[in-house]
Image 1 (cartoon, rainbow, N blue to C red):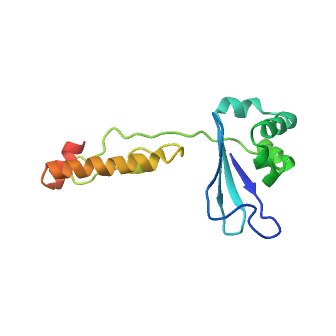
Image 2 (tube, rainbow, N blue to C red):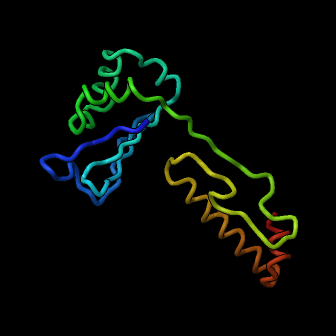
Image 3 (cartoon, helix red, strand yellow):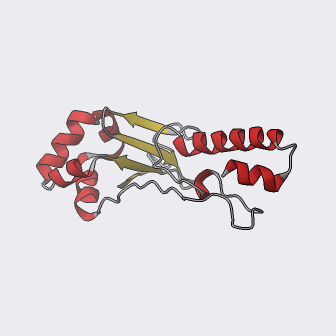
Length: 153
C-alpha cells in the first residue's frame, strides 16, 4: 500500500538523499523521495493484518503501536483516509522454468528470470549471483557462449 508523505513548508520532511526504512518484525515501511519534495512510502504487511484493520480506530492504534515515528510525518487522519480508500496488492515471486532460449543464443537472468518481492535487495542479490554463475560457466567453456548458455541452463 502506498502512503504519501507531503513536503513540510515546501521542503522535504526528511533528508532526501536516503531510502528511509521503518523495519518491524513482520512488516516494513519504505519511503523514497520524489522531485516535488514529497516521499512515496510503501507499507508492506501480511495480507491477514491488512484484512484485520478495517476500522479507523484499529488503523490508528496499529500505527501508534508500531510506527509512531512514521506518524509524525503523515498524521493519523491521512493514514486512516489512505488505508480505508486503498486496496493492498500482493507481492509475488516469478520463476521461469527455462532461462535459455531453445536456440541457445539468448539467456534470461536477473529480474527477467525470477522477479522477487522488494525485501533486502534480494532481486539485486539474485541478479549478481546469476552474473557470477554465468561468468564461472563461461570460463569453464572457454567463453563459448552457446556451450556456456546450455551448461548454465
